[in-house]
Amino acid sequence: MSGPAPGARLDLAGVLSGVRRMAPLSLFVVVFGLAFGVAALSRGLSGLEALLMSALVFAGASQFAALELWGPEIPLLPLIATTFAINARHLLMGAAIQPWLAQLPPTQRYASMVVMSDSNWAMAVADRQRGETNVGMLVGGGIALWLTWLAGTLLGVLFGSGIDAPERFGLDVIMGCFLLAMLVGGRRDLSMLLPWSAAALAALAAMAWLPPHSHVIVGALAGGLAGLLVSPRRGEREATA
Image (tube, rainbow, N blue to C red):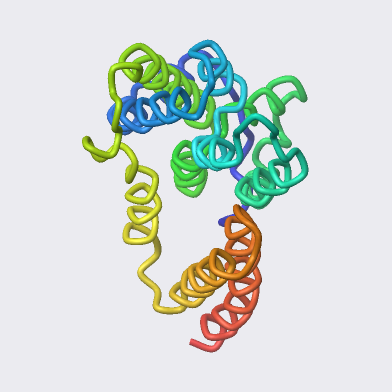
């Protein structure tokens, strides 16, 4: 990222602007939330439990992963480890914008983190690189995503009981399509193929030879380690270019 922006502020106008700018993208989150609501009902959660999970957790990939472990007896440690592995990227995301948010009062700083997700973080980072001082994109964009995620879950809960086979409507592949879109729409750099390939191969191997559900953790760790190997080499190439 570029150097620190000249100050940082958070006000209602900035938050409303963030909501408006994120609104078109957040509409797609409704479909993702609907798929979660349907899947949650099929795994035995009540409608209220599904809504509370979306409202309090607000982490789509982790919520889908948790459903894979859901049952009469919930394996608590694998559930915690899987959730941490999937959401560990937020540690880096938070560190990336810490110099900017550090200029805010503590209450605003930590409240901003509650609604941080990939999309509004990326747009907020782009704003800061352009010299924007208002943090409203992070907060307003997060609120827009949270509301549409909750609305989508509600639709899935309301209509999910009437969907006996979600795969007939392609709702079972939305998660895969979402992750594929992240890969295709990401950085156009051949070096990124290494961590993605390492994660995919490790996950497939874990599915074949390791206990159930361990492939999520193994794939995330393999991809992360491969990414650590790629980053220094890419930095050296950029320095010598």
